[in-house]
Length: 495
Image (cartoon, rainbow, N blue to C red; front, side, top):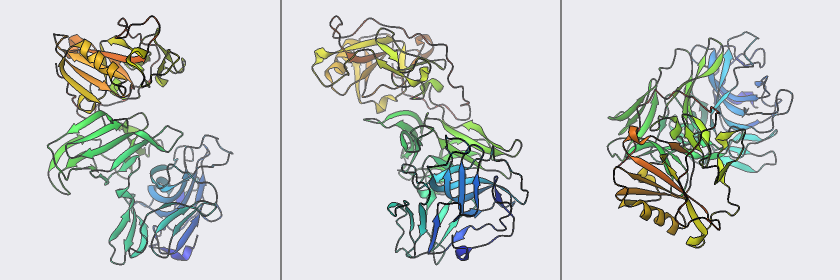
């Protein structure tokens, strides 16, 4: 790395956790043209952690206290599964929170693992020898070891004069008048930090899994009438919404102590989720994770570790309403997972009930004749999808008509039938895909709900359904997370 290109030098000593004994400066800015190579030799301020993770800092912004959690831009490998001693092969170019010490040589290499809060290449991690180039024409470009361009900020020719990692974690390309030309805050991945906003049309998109950084199916977005979380399906299935009066300029701002939807910058509050305040001298962030939870994390100096401090979303009625809590076709009952009907479904993995279920019929459901399919009926069963985001809705119909509508529709994989007192006067919600379901008690919710699941017909099964089957929960507890920090998002349960 060209040290002569680093600007804005500070005077505190800093160590990335477990790293070089003395790095006498922070180095938060760079000028065109600068190139950083993803190697220990090129990035002298590098760290290998006890779990095998690696951090290689290209830019570093110390926090005002000059030690503790700070923001760095560089190459990070943080979901390493090979353990210490095995080489790290998958690096993200991004921004991460790293733990810095003002001079001590002993630091927390076991608990200070960098927390990546933005990345340029989540779907295409790079290996040793990849390069990040701040080009002469003002662009920021990531290249593979072979020189192929994998990502670009798209800022070439826009008068960029410098680059900075700010104290709030925002990576900024700025012009000669110090105006922002490009910033990472406008391109969120799965994480928001305090001071960052989620603008209308932008998304937080969860990882596919713990080990797979690529974009998954779960996302959080701001619309003109609600902050909402979805599973990407056809159409998208919504499992949470924080509603407000329709406003074309609505956006969500993550501030100290709240996640607030405003009608415009500095404008009127439309709705708000209260959060724990950020402790002095530390960093807090929220991450949308592959299980659908938007979790809040904070660095705790006592114990020197990251801890979850809240669960931001609160789907109705409880945590069983998360879309993948029990996997596809799985049933959630008091946070226990099971398959809905042993005669028609089997577990994907009997040792892990939360992996979901599959129909036992050998042939998959396809767009063939109506006679090729039947419906398995599950009484007192609900579905997480908000009714107004169902594939199709039929109002004031009978249960028989609801079931027929699903059987007659090639794209329908399930029908939820909801009624109050008269089963001939209910609401039918057709679904294009079946993810996790949840048991419900009509005497508590004051409505009845039955899920009719489409499967392949067997020789002796009936075309319009099978006898009702009750779900029997397995004795395996899954997750018990706190969700008391946000108000309930009420679904439209019309009876």
